[in-house]
Length: 237
Length: 267
Image 1 (cartoon, rainbow over the protein chains, first blue to last red):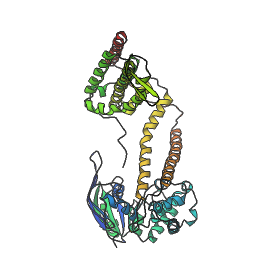
Image 2: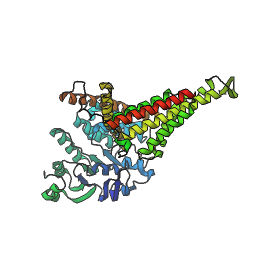
Image 3: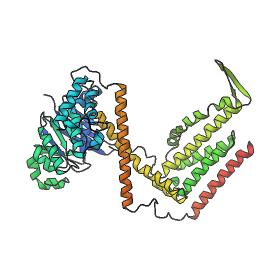
Image 4: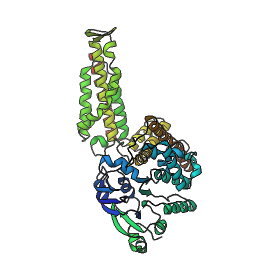
């Protein structure tokens, strides 16, 4: 059991000197489901991109027992952390759903039989078994979202990190995604504005504002603190 | 998160920055025209042009090194002129054979290549001065004021507006691919797949970018049409040129003509 996220004194500056992340520290234990909330521009997406080394800041990031700073670890870290981006169109760039879900396993060099098994399992996990031959481009946003989650599940990651999984979905598609996230056993960090989902799904919440983690609390207590939520641009659900 | 390094404009308060964009555009284009119209080997004129562009660079308060470094952009264009060393007939300088071929370097050829190299070098410097001291919207306004076809200016403007959006989109695609380019911790499989497979994936990404750009174009057009766009961009008129603008413009053009006359009379 080493699928933890440990972030210690992480600082990330843009080329113009703006501190997008300012001394961020937190630890997520194996199996925990944690929400990452905060206003637009708080640094949520920037933080997420540090968890598998796409961005590198100063400070320490350890994921699944590996130091993210070391180049030799990067491929293993990217296989261990499934990153689901906000816009599924960014993630679905192959001609068919199958090709997209198979990308991770193929990149890892797995034999064909295992690739097919992984794709089938990942599509089954998101309840999209019948869509393997479809063209991603023609799917609905909700379906694209679930396929995007499947493209990371096929890597059998230990940790799932999702950026706004419910943004832009209609109520039914949103409900489907929440149900799906509840079924998945991985350690989870979810960046979102959807506090109703947070209340339902994620027992612990990190609040970010202006590049800092301003709260790390149990979700029910946090959502009761209306004054604090308002002070950081959030609203009680 | 975003790509900003594409914009060559550097804000400043130097006299060159504050010069009216219309005057700047005309003088920059006329400078390049003067450089290209000068005969080959008119070195005194070339030196004058260099002195002029260096003085302008000094006036921008951005440091001459900034411009000289970027002016190396002109280097690839000089490659195209290189064969002239051998093809121009004249006083032979050196001869060598390569297999069945005999090459003769002529003095005239060398002079011509050196002239082309010099002309493109100073011209590129002027273009860099223009782009780094004039913001793109100002440049577009100047183009419109100078009666450059409106459709062309509109295309430049939209390209400038959306090239950053496209670059961001491409960046996000690349990140999404990098995020899934992993390796198993235990198994010793070779990662990365075959070259052909990687090429196919990259092709898919390019295709996806194209389709999304196309759709974005449709949406942008719909949004423009919804606000009454009829193929014509209307903007507020620029303020009239003041007397000193006209003086700068006139003085600049006279200097160019004098430099050209010096070159044309000498050769």
